[in-house]
Length: 119
Image (cartoon, rainbow, N blue to C red; front, side, top):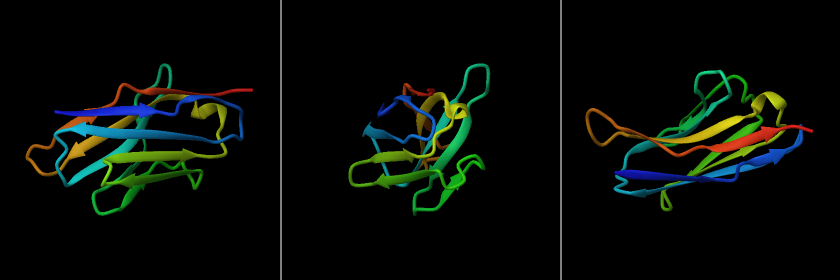
């Protein structure tokens, strides 16, 4: 089993910045992909950005250079640095890990961290 612990959410004004962090613990075996998803009230969970094992990234259009993802495989950690935040970025942000060493792959989720963008 893998556990994901997120931190860094909070209240920020429009145009501000915030960094979310996620650390994986437990039985973490390479290779694996990690990413951030978000879910706003009344909406489906959606991909924000993910970084695959090997370093390739996949991001949603709304990221458009505002968000930056980084991972540290030695620490099994993942950071999401968000800049130029907008009210529509308000959501619960979830860390995700998808295994690639086994078939079928497994997905693990953190408990979520609230990000609120408001003046």
